[in-house]
Amino acid sequence: MKKILTGLQPTGELTLGNYIGAIKQMKEYQEKYESYLFVADMHSITINQDSKILREKSKSLIALYLACGIDPQKNIIFLQSDNIYHANISWVLECNTYFGELSRMTQFKDKSSKHQNFTAGLFTYPILMAGDILLYDVDYVPVGKDQKQHVELTRDIAQRFNKKYGETFKIPEPLINKVGANIMDLVDPTKKMSKSSENKKGIIQLLDDEKMIRKKIMGATTDSFGKIHYDTQNQPGISNLMTIYASLKNCPIEMVEEQFKDSNYGSFKKEVADLVIDILLPIQTKYRELLNSNQIDDILDHGKDVTTKIACKKYELVKQKVGLGR
Ligand code: ATP
Ligand code: LTN
Image 1 (cartoon, helix red, strand yellow):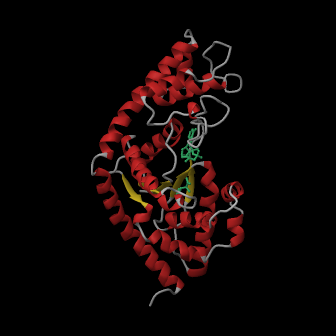
Image 2: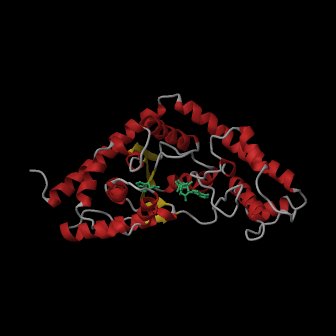
Image 3: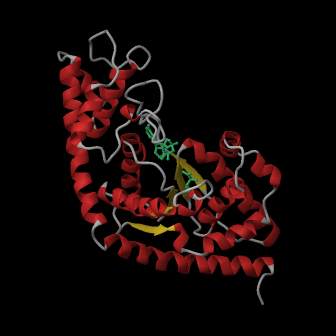
């Protein structure tokens, strides 16, 4: 069975865009791959974080994923900082990565230009990510487009290391999320629904209450055509609501168009809101149960045990190849 691994930073609240574009897909992958899913808390401290909030968010992210249907029997779920080998291997890889390569990372260029003072960690972050991946000999790394460059750097580092020290790492491939599921902002449907968006009216957070979800969907920007028709150019708002409806119902857009051809915007929006609420409320109930149980700690203990064994073996091999230790 092929192996996949992906990590998520415990920052921001997950949105309906993340659910439709990423979580639903992970549920499909877990059926056909050996899956490793971790919370990249060490990546989050590349920028300033409140320690109490960071710890709560790490736990909450796992609870939310489980509540959405990520199955702990089918995924090894772990917390990055529980496994010391991620930081250890990262140092060896740092010594096999060039300053010039890191300087070309577009995410670093974007993020560093926004701050006067940024940490060395923000610069070397892609190497920690390379370590996360290379420790486990994975075949694929499911990521959004923004992370593709980091997976390519991981491949370069691994290939260089293998050439210099002999076969050590498997060369991973990025698995880029399918296009199509690009959920747009409800207020400005020409931009992506993003968890870091400033105007919260445009985004549905998975933990928004029923009243809030209804208010946001009923207030979504539409147009003056008055026809439920899929046309992202001229009717981006209504097309976005149709995409949300079709994705959650697992049906083609044409079926939505046919079903609502005689409806007005108000009644269509009400149907969309009812559907989103029907899906999110049970997730929220499950989430609260999980947060108050010991299940998350049990899952993380198991993940720590399993991944520490695998990572320790790989790290010892790396040490031996490089000439570290006795
Ligand atoms: P940020 O605002 O911090 O950039 P984000 O909401 O854009 O966050 P990411 O953390 O970058 O989300 O992405 C997590 C996953 O969710 C990725 O796989 C990404 O492709 C998917 N995703 C994010 N936003 C959407 C969206 N609007 N529609 C579909 N998929 C999305
Ligand atoms: N950098 C990623 C999170 C991440 C990751 C990884 C993803 C850290 N390590 C390893 C895939 C594989 C992000 O910010 N979304």
